[in-house]
Image 1 (spheres, rainbow, N blue to C red):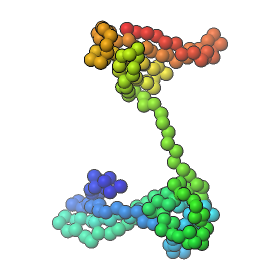
Image 2 (cartoon, helix red, strand yellow; image 1 turned 90 degrees about the horizontal axis):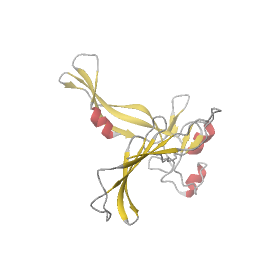
Image 3 (spheres, rainbow, N blue to C red; image 1 turned 90 degrees about the vertical axis):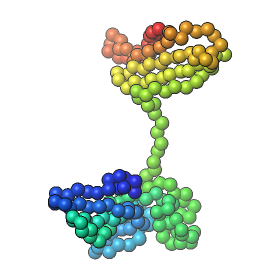
Image 4 (cartoon, rainbow, N blue to C red; image 1 turned 30 degrees about the vertical axis):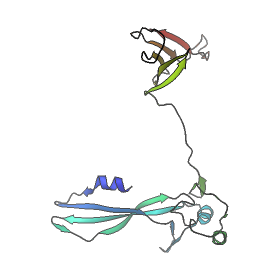
Length: 205
């Protein structure tokens, strides 16, 4: 976050010769603001029971600059950041097993998840093909080392699969001026208007 703030640097205003200079940004510890305005330490179990988000305030140092006059910096809260359980910003990270039991937590809980509106949430990684990107890899075919370039298009279901022989590593005499490409079209519709589910290859060379 500090890199983003450093790149922004300042916030321009509509007042002539006046702008806001941005300084240090930091994330505090999870807190809860009560109805009377008081702030207390927030623990994960409290967030679960009260259906609130286990988050911490984001503090940003800002300085008003008017012409050649630079006022004293002021730290303001600009938002809330959900905190992962058992991370460095979590209130449980330095607690003993007995202290965790006192605040209603399981000492054997490994953490690694978030609590949003009282519900435990976890981030899932997703691996997918990169559309419209050329992916190049090496393969062995019939004793020859070849280069394979693949392109997966996201337009209308067309996919391009091309194979290129590397003349410097291949032991086979290959005419490198010719490149064979295999196009896979999306499944076609039958007479009833329903796809038959078969991919139809077309060779182009």
